[in-house]
Image (cartoon, rainbow, N blue to C red; front, side, top):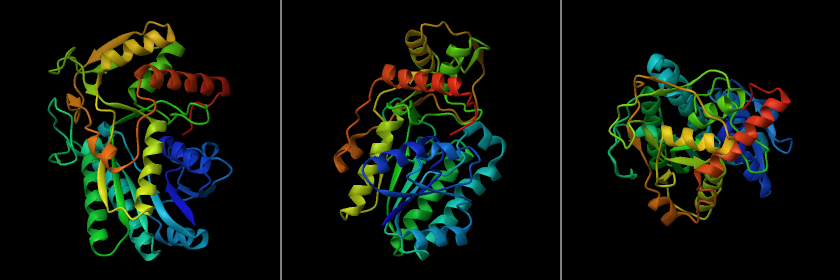
Length: 332
């Protein structure tokens, strides 16, 4: 049987494809290549260029490739963009996911793993977030993910596939073997932007908000290495295959770093001093977002292997150097 990975030409999806192939799984990728790149998909996987909202295409792929499990990454993910253009996010994230889930039901998919986000929680306190906390998303991006979670849960109750929803916190870093990394055009991820700045020495990094109620006034986030996150998907798949019931789990390390702490770490790893400019808070940005990962470690045999900010930054910086050497500025 084959595993269908939507958005498998993108940042997190491409790392999951690598992890699946590394252990001998048959993988099919559907990606419209709007933010991903065909070269990011290993030749051992089948790449189908198309939109997950195309139910006829998805149904054909499921049937022809003998797909029994879906890992769904495809989505738009920029919080400020979602505030400015909410309908795009409800189309790309919610409506397209609805079409994918409907095609999955028709194709008798057994297992469905969904890429959700910490943005579903919204306003947060200083305590680590648990899966039982109230969902109060502050952006259409977060709301679009909540809506998809509800669709998936209701579908499962009506006889649809068992599911695992993984709520990611801030994903960063690159494959330790240098096979994949974050290279989305105009990416806004802090660690990527800081690493780019360290290499180019051009422009300044904008810090959005310096008056948050945190230890240095800047936002605090829980950063998880993308390779650890890919392994969490494999653990989730094994759990569902072994008969585990549908569940929702956080994916994070349970500790947070401020924007300024991340920037200082990039400076230390790169040996370069970065220029900063401060601006006001961005709409939809909570002060502190940190995961409780007690549930995922209780439910799955998943344990972080790269839980170190310097390791995350080092791998990201190495990937940026690779992109620069290859002249690839737009990719996955």
